[in-house]
Length: 287
Image (cartoon, rainbow, N blue to C red; front, top):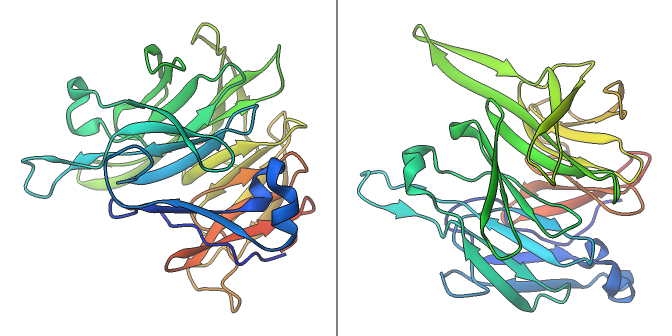
C-alpha cells in the first residue's frame, strides 16, 4: 500500500520532518484517518534541522533524529548541525546533544543511526570506518571499527539485544574506483562495544545504503539500484523488492535510500518526489 505521507529526503537544506503516523503506534487512530505529523523547520535551535539524514525509534517509541555535517565547498567551514535530537511520539522536543568530532577531520560525516533498548545511540561514519556509541546524555562510549561503516541497526530483544553494522565502500585505488565490503554483517555487544561475530550474507551488499531488522531477527538492506533485500537471521537471501533500475516506476513507489520496519513487519522507505514520498510495503513485501 502506498502512503501519501511526505518525508523530506536527506540534504543539508532539509528543515521539516513529516512522518506518516503509521510509524507511531501511539497515534494509530490518527493514522487510520491518513493524517501526518509535521514538525521542525530550518535552523539550529532545538526542534529544527540542518542536514537531517536519518531517524530511529527507541523501545518507548521516542523519535531520534540524526543531523550530519560536512565541509563547505570552500573547505573554510562546516555545514550541518552535527547532532542527535530526541522527541516524543507526538513530536515534542525532549533533548539534544552534539556529536561533532574535530579529530576526525573531513571524515566526520555521520550517516546512519540506531537506538538500542537502553537508549544508547549508534552512529555510522563511513569515511572514518567507524561506528560510535553514545550514552543517553550524549557521552561517547565506544568506537567500533567497521570498514566503510554505512548502516547500523538494533537486533533482537532485551536482554539479548545486539547491534549489527554493515560496511560498504567505494574508493579510488590505483586511479580506479573499487568496491569493497558487504560480504557479512558485524555483530556488536551493545554493553561492551566488542565485536562478537559475523553474519555472512548469501549476496554481497557492497552497495548497501541502509539497514534495519524486524522482531523475528530478519534483516532488510536497501542497496543500489532501488532494491530492498530481506535476509534471514543467518544471512540467507529470502526476498527482494524494487525495480533494480534507475528508471522510475510509473507510480513512483520504488525504494530509495532509507528503510525502516515497524512492529508488524511492515517496511517503510522514501520514494521519488520533492519532498519525497514515504512508501509502506506490507509484511509480505507488497506495495
